[in-house]
Image: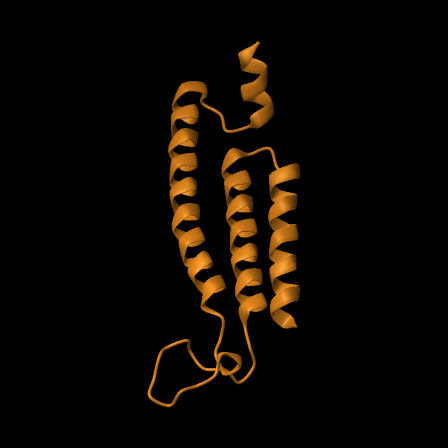
Length: 113
């Protein structure tokens, strides 16, 4: 239960940062928090109490005694994709700062017109 609460809290804090903050770096940090909260939520959904790792063994465990490996594989893939998206976003932010000398979204929007 604590994993669900923690994941929802991370998602809400990240959404707050994305929607309210005007600094681009803080918005990217908020997106990373949402990403981490979703990862935790997927892992918490796939967790089974008193289960073993989904590895074949000679003991012949049933499927009900093993943790579901699909959410773990999806989260591992999502972590790699999230890292790449964050790196690209930070590279774009660096270029924006070099060009406009500000990271404030409102000031960059005003410079456009």
